[in-house]
Image (cartoon, rainbow, N blue to C red; front, side):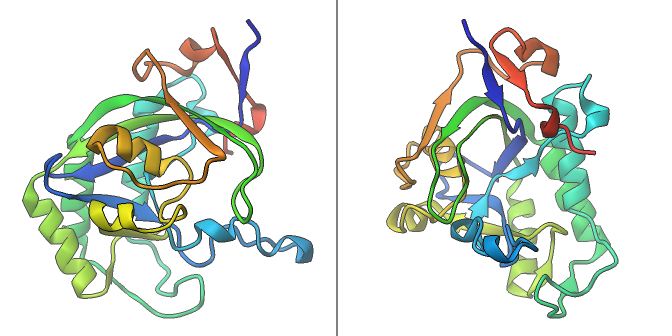
Length: 235
């Protein structure tokens, strides 16, 4: 059987306190997402700017011999942490959440991580979205105490920044269901629908299938059916 070539293999998670509470914590791209320095490519990924997405990201070259578990913990540790900048992608100033809150949120999300499953994404071109590509989303759900949700909510209410990559927000599932097909980015909607039993819309060009095997320990264990592109491993 011919192997499926993967352009991306992110480790991703969504966060909630309970399955039936009606809200989910997601990351989100800011208004600068997908901007290109090329004059003929300024609208790339326009549809996903400022839209909620799963937390996480792709593995680094140094993690090639490891597996998805290491990557999701590293990604959460990196994203929910203060860095030097106090200006957003538009040059507007913002205020960071205090270090105690960031550490509390970061540690609780990491400690609450549970395997949910591998989701194969086969995407056709989407206008203002992404070109044709295949990816596996090694997906986790992080179940956290309500105190974590309230800490995030308080910081959002006070306009405090939590993530150094875009933003982190609390989203109501009913509102996502009522919004358009670009209410979320990439594979977020079908993965949330699988877990919560919701009907969040997404473009018909996005096809997501939950694989029979759960998240695997090492990337090498995927090579029976998949092949990772060299460009997948970030420097």
